[in-house]
Amino acid sequence: NTTVIFRGSSSPSECLTIISNFLRLSYDTCYPKPCAIGSIYQPSVGSDIFYAVAVFAFVASDLKATDSSGRLDIDKLNKTAHIYCSKTIDDAASVYNVPPEFGSNTCMMALYITELLTFSYGFPVNTKRIYSFKDINGKSLNWPFGAVVYEAELLARDYPCPPFYQINAGTSQHQLRLTLLQLLTVSVLVSVLCSTKHV
Image 1 (spheres, rainbow, N blue to C red):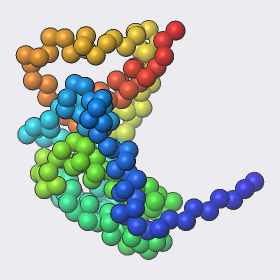
Image 2 (spheres, rainbow, N blue to C red):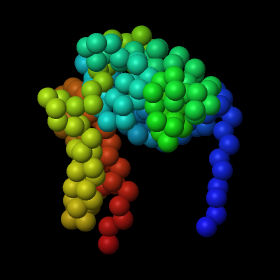
Image 3 (cartoon, one colour):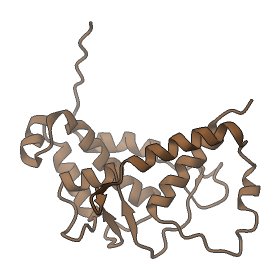
Image 4 (cartoon, rainbow, N blue to C red):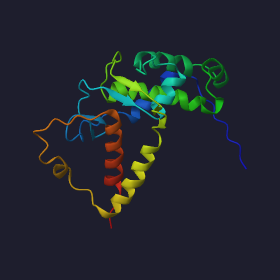
């Protein structure tokens, strides 16, 4: 048995620099445009209401970045994340009531979420269109993502990933309007289906 000790810097700006590298847009390989992360297509967020679930909801709740209606305040989440991440795990746990074993994850995810929503997806920092929920009518919103990945892996064995132009054929006359939940689901499906090698 080997004991490994991780020593962090408690520097949110250093963490954000690393996170930003993973969320960088690849202008050269972005097709079709616009893209959000790398060369992954991302339609404009438009004016629809979006719902942030799973880890988005837990982090927003832990850092008290939602109002009584569940509306996410990205600016507050960003500012609180920088304060939270500047503390030691024990101090952060006592101030924000986050168990110490989740302290580092909460820091990283809070920084990641704010960067993803603003830099990658293009939401203004003062948007009022994102709501964050852990459940709806007492039903957890965590399990659907696991089910989607499982089903997508099963489908990937039977259906080769078509070229991108076939996926888009006939949609140029229709405006595609997706919620954040749908975007995440589509992203998972496309990633799994198109990254699986077919024999």
